[in-house]
Image (cartoon, rainbow, N blue to C red):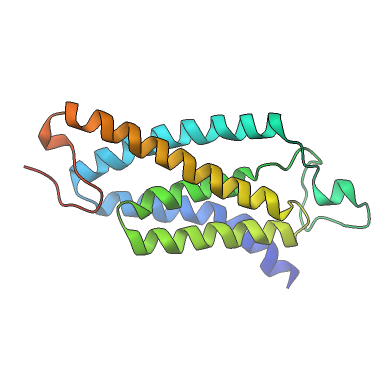
Length: 168
């Protein structure tokens, strides 16, 4: 059981972006541009929001609070709020969801499962995971809004609506 938790906690957050990369290769050229631009914006925003959230709230890791808990894998006893892994994996999942809805939902579920495996592994509290997912949703919403503002100003052949075939 412990091995499964460690694999879920450490592999799922890496598997999500790997699958997203495959999605990027399968979307039309215009959607690649849109997805890539939104990914850059969303990742910058999510990294900034993670820093702000961590500065506003400190949540020592479970094993740092309760010495009777031993983490399932080596981890520094720093601030666990919010979960960086969950925030980044969820950001990628929400971005994929804009272009491949069902797959995005599956990736979001994988992000959340990976996050809660980190809770079971004693390296995060549940609030860290929830905050990471909420921060990701906000970051992707900001990226989508900015893209919606920029998209009309770009040449028509370069832009595509989420889930649509290339224009022109």
